[in-house]
Length: 101
Image (cartoon, rainbow, N blue to C red; front, side):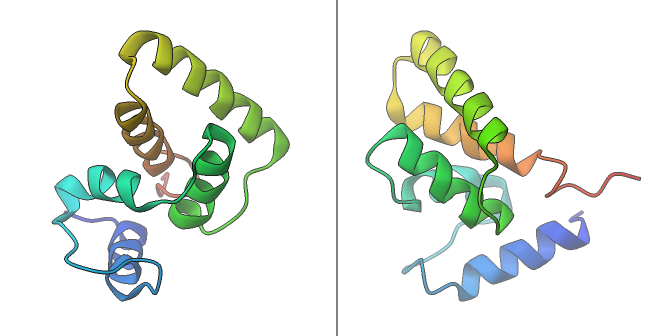
């Protein structure tokens, strides 16, 4: 079951001019999206991920928290691709994305 925001966001991803090619089902979208968001550096990826997932730029305190998260995840996972997937998953759980009742 999708929340309305997830359904709308998933629909927008399908229609997005940013992405070309097939889009996976919702259960695998974070893996696909993590590979589709541009950003050669962690800061560039974080900034772009906020815009792509939450449709707004990250505030400075959010950037700092995401950088700290990135560093901790890199120490643990030692894989840039998995860290990107983890960050996208975190953003999907952000209060701006999830409806809290």
